[in-house]
Length: 288
Length: 289
Image (tube, helix red, strand yellow):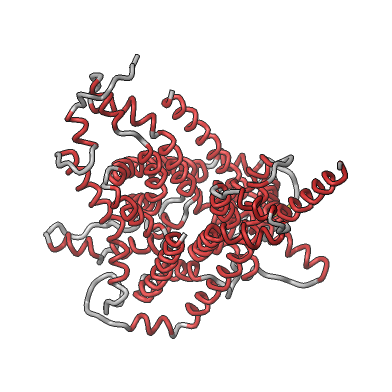
């Protein structure tokens, strides 16, 4: 049995290991270990960026500086096409999933209704189902839909950017709901009541009070959805058709054959885009 | 009076329906229904052209349970996922303690430094390891310089493991940090005052109290690892088959493709996941008690 006792004569040994800003062997070991982990996290990224400028044709050694791989990349219509596809899919997916997700978040946070728990499950399930399962399920589903369309109209459809976008929206919605719900939870509802008391109807209350206040949450959700779509590989691989591949799929197809510094270059650009998005979301959060 | 209330209620119900319907429809149509379809497919069979034939059978499941190719893939994926999760935990826990015990103004930047690699494309991060581990890559260059000579690093199961740990570590650190940051470290001093040594204090006090973070992090790492196929393909050289590799092949590249068998594998994978996570929750909640 452990009884609570006042911590007056704290053992220096344990305090040393855990307390702030004091130099101990275990503290030093912990710091050293952590520095190694940070190096482990960053070394590959630094090397990738560095080697996008190497002259080495395999892109794995430093043999001098060159911009050639970037120039080649920009002159590669396949890569540029895939990059454009990726941006289009991410934009559409972000807009649709942000709208649907925000509406769902409002419903879940503001209303009590029958089947609410089931709805909760349906919303959070896409986060825990392995992506490959979702991907093959959507692939099977799209094949059936295409078969039906062929039977009805005689038209043969193939997987295209629309199928990918639908898949991206399906997994992005859940993440948007999570983010927007947090901002709705921290929301002072008396502000809405005050607006109503002052004669605003519910439409005005929403657009003048609720929406501006939860906007940072909505933008946060949208940025997350955008990044998820940009970064997605598995669903994109299964749902994109021939000639409509996305950037990660294009990179995958190239990497499986051979490593070239062109891949280092496109990877570096993707990295910069992701980081810019993170910086943007941080900036927006700070303003809040 | 009642009519105003009724009116209000009706308006509320319409509003709720408008909020719910788009999301509900999308998730039912493009998430739940497809899952039902592969569940049904898993009991079907296919013809020589790879088309699904609607004749109910248990053959797919029998194949998976009896052919070593499939049995081995399940064991390999489960074992690798457990190993990845445990190593991520062993690396992530001290790191999370380090961040939580840093001076206040350093914590957020340190956490952001963990997050930034996580925001970059998974495929790109894995690809970066190809450069490092390549036969004529940096590590081998270094080994040659110090006289060890070149080693085969790429296209090994060790490389797969490194890639998985690298890719999933942030998922472990974040929930761990959230739990450890809430932990009151003066409790450790109290335990010491009562005569507990460091190990006892950690096992009896800190570990149980940070268990929610351990559980959340482990589940977040385990789920994507179980279904992965990119890492074993790009870093492991696709020498051995993991679950994800087989499923991908059955759906996209096999000749003929076999969607019913692939579906059965996916369904079984979900089942394995469910059972393992439930077991894990049970064990860890006993620990907490």
